Image (cartoon, rainbow over all chains, first blue to last red; front, side, top):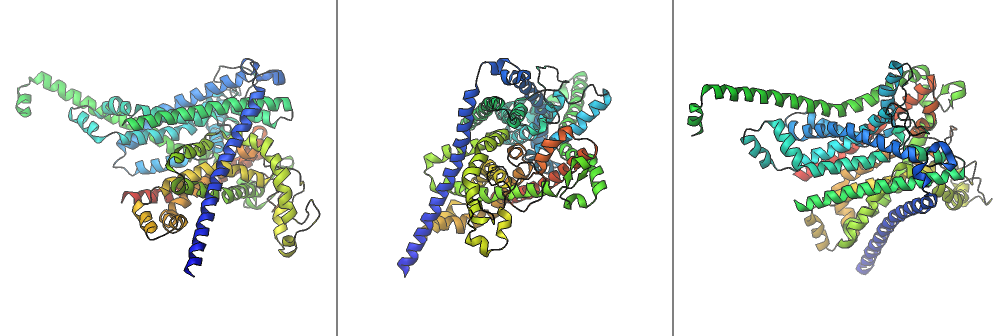
Length: 288
Length: 343
């Protein structure tokens, strides 16, 4: 009797362990499958003209304008989000200790982190694209600037969160030492705290960059896309994810090949960024 | 000692110091205000996203009233809009995604915390997290070009042979003959077409697995070793320790992690935009094509005018409110674990 109970428990355990390993294998299998397809399909589309010609040439063209556009949009997004995000994170970590507002904002920031990006895109459409259309009499509608603001909204919560977390890791003795010397709090924050948490904050910015460089949905109705090379942030601006989106929908297989090549470049860029960010972060923690 | 020293300081220097103190106080106050204003922008972004979509979507809510939620007509040529199909598509894909992602994520978390040898845990969890780093547009492409044809060739015929009333092989299965409602969920007009709610749900499942499994892994690690060791010492098997000690201890946070994944799945655009089919015909079937709120917006907003634009804004508002509530629940459940951890 007891032997059969023992056997039953053992069998149950073995089944559960096997299923668990199977689940892990499934997860890894899908990762390998997606990466493999991106790699193999993407490499076949890699040609020098991908980086030198613009999308206006369609099949004979490349993605140069989209890559330049993506670069400009990402830089705009990070330039807007970094000062605001670092300031907000600093306020959460250093100034909001006795207020109820602090925990609330920290909590809402976590929600903003996973809010649907397409709705954030529509928000920027409403507050930037529509007014600029109205003010300039239709001359400026969709623009790189609007795209940059949309990306900044997505980068913002990532930067706020890492700044907040990194500053809270700075030992309190550092603050006390500075304050006892009569350093005003703003100087303490800017010159001591932010500086000592710098590598962590940079990690956050890199992670935010990795996140926004893959975003498509918020750019559709803000930067809109453009088949020509443009450096003007008030112009409609193309981006790599948005061109991949258009080229994937395209019925022509030659265009689909270009989409795969773009996907390959994008994936490598994003994964490299997040690996660098993670590696930098890990080495920082182990030093402390 | 300090006091005596400062008494000897000439008065000109003392006024200078007082001035500097006043300046520092003022600067500190301005600095604090600027930082606070930046923090309030986070609040503003959330309120603004809800407010702007409600404002521009008001026209559609006002025109169609409550019928906007229950009508299955989405017809731009006649300017008639009802959100039922996108809403059902969003819920359907998210449901399928959770159905597959939750058990797999649980298995992965279990493997990484209890089964795998120490040297394997780091690399495997990094690899799973790599899945979260892949841009969603790549999932969409992979879904359209690779996974949907795979489903059409291998998965869908099997499902239809076993569960639908109109199977490709012509033999109605025993299950369908005896369970009356089951065929309703597995019918399909185009048996050899891979796109549909089911396929989109599976792509979403792969996307949210890293989110759910990393939360589960983290919360499983918060279980005190003492508790687990005690159970092992009493002769429990690994599975018994997990099911009777780890899971009850972390239940709230595990559900929080699942809700976090649900929030992601509801709002995802690019991964489902290609594989959903973008049709607006109401169907109970998971194998039929459909559309989700996010994919409808992505496909139609560019050319939308007037009432159509308003209807799209209105469904964006619905999506935002629902994901907000789901994420709110998720964060509340995850926060409770943190406070427990502190004690």
